[in-house]
Amino acid sequence: MPPTSRPLRKLGFLTIGLFDEADPRRGHESTLEIIELGERLGFDSAWVRHRHLQYGISSPVAVLAAASQRTRRIELGTAVIPLGWENPLRLAEDLATVDLLSGGRLNPGVSVGPPMHYEQVKDALYPDTADAEDFGYERVRRLLDFVRGKPATDFSGVEGFEATRRQPHVEFSSDRVQPHSPGLGRRLWYGGGSLRSAQWAGEHGMNFLTSSVVKVEGPGEAADFAAIQLSHIRAFRAAHPDGEDARVSQGLVVIPTDSASPEQRAKYEEYAAKCLPRTTSPQGPARLLFAPDLVGTSEEIAERLHAHATFREVDEVAFALPFTFEHEDYVQILTDMATKLGPALGRQPTRPAA
Image (cartoon, rainbow, N blue to C red):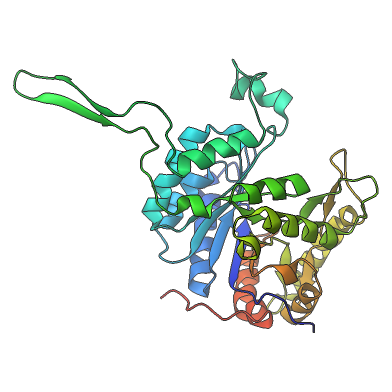
């Protein structure tokens, strides 16, 4: 087995947080229980996806606020918040608030681009400004500035008036987003699958989230997932002020089967087989290429990862859980990740939470 160039330092996982429309509370509770389990198992980070007008987490910041009060150590991330649905100033307030409540454990991941199905949702989302909204990188830059403490207005000071005859009413105004959470600006991530996104994230001092999807951009570019993703990581670090020390996380779909029942293994293998056709060639007008889901024992998965050019370039991962499995499946997968796969990848175990 070839050695990795970067020893695995941080082990994380990503969940979509599906729920049943008839009982949405149970689905959200399941997500929180999974995050609590992750902390007990010694994971370094737990990440939640973001879904609008679907049966998945529509408010990850609220979910992570709840998770912050049920955990003590594990880092909490979003992968990712699509900024086309957000006001950067308001989001900056929410992120800073949750970061403070968590004790500085929040890792917000974001992305840009028009909201999915924009023609169908724009009248509900931006009824008066749909055609004027900018869904490009400027939206991320505004969020970065607000989180990092740059002024949001040219006014600050004291306002007051005589509320009663005896006691004045005084309000203090700040020119920057409040609360301000020192350090949060260094924990902002950009989730990208294109070369330009990687370069932009590096130029603006963000961290870089990779996933199981990349964009095949040039007409002559080979449909080689690992080679494309590796080029993104190297472009990101070349543009980043921290260079080779800039943080990158890989987010492939990984399903260890060490303690799985025969029925679970069959289900996992069938799931991966159904996803396999999209890994052989670029998909759709955006020419998206997907990585194969990795199913097998931890030793088998570790061997495949050690042979993966991108994995050898990173020292932290947030392995993605499949979308449609049951709670007990996620418990088994996470337990095997923490107790079998992590050690097989050479990660030094984190002390599990008491």
